[in-house]
Length: 364
Image 1 (cartoon, helix red, strand yellow):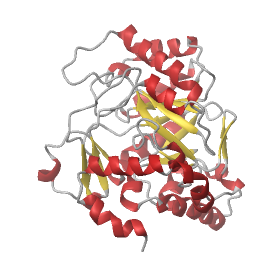
Image 2 (tube, rainbow, N blue to C red; image 1 turned 90 degrees about the vertical axis):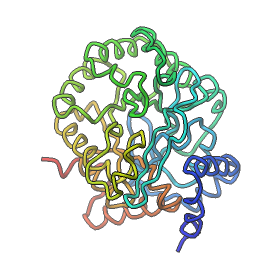
Image 3 (tube, helix red, strand yellow; image 1 turned 45 degrees about the vertical axis):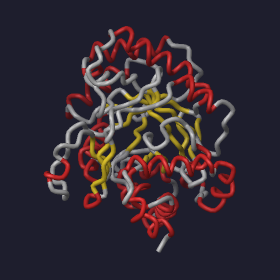
Image 4 (cartoon, one colour; image 1 turned 90 degrees about the horizontal axis):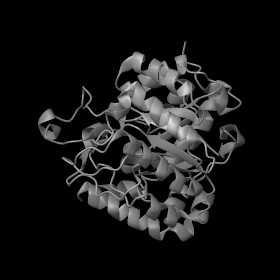
């Protein structure tokens, strides 16, 4: 039994957002111990190393955006043994996010309902905090449109696009890669904007023309819209130059089949993370892998990853990199080492010499 298993009941008696703040505060204080932490937790094996656009990830198992919103605990998080750490989402302007309560637990589903609305300190503050930071793993920054609050009038197309470009210019020097979040499931700003092909094309045209520090750049998009949306997305993105890969976001609608009674969560706003999101996100992963130019694009995967088998399944469905977050809440920090170590065991079982050889092998 791990220490976290003993502590979790007490943490789960706290308001979820309060528990999150306590975890972040502990992480911020633990930064000085990160090298020692990583020496104990990291699983280092060349069979797991992934290189994308010249950027080396020591393992494909990383932390998804949403846990460290402002880059306050990146050293400690890298110390947990992740192969990459992604922070954010960060917007050009500061945002308070949505009003609380905005984070809920579904223990029977080992899931969360997330309605934060991307609260963050803004690009300038985050870039300043991260200036000079050096991690043993790639640091990604997730960039999103500013949430101005429910009921705020939408800004114009050109202004929204310009916000993303400004955030990219400010944040790129502090990042090893950028993840452009074009589909936040719990804000109104920009959620439907990029469903319009003309607007997506205009955004990508602006990105091509924006001279931010060269970094691998990826898109995080809605999983809703089916195969037609994926085909259209690949066609439009393929006409442009800066995007190296894709990731599918949580859906804005609650999934079917939750174990938790509907009466518990029906009034809760937000998207469901964890195992209930896996089926839809895996479907998008497979269909995108089938159709994309594999010499041009790679895929990040997420959704219900709490074991090595979960991560390996997503790799075999087309993912080069796998991000988790909800499992960290339910399983504790030891989950990172267990998944990474277990992934090596699965490669050995199947006679796979390098994790890249397993990418997409289950997709026909």
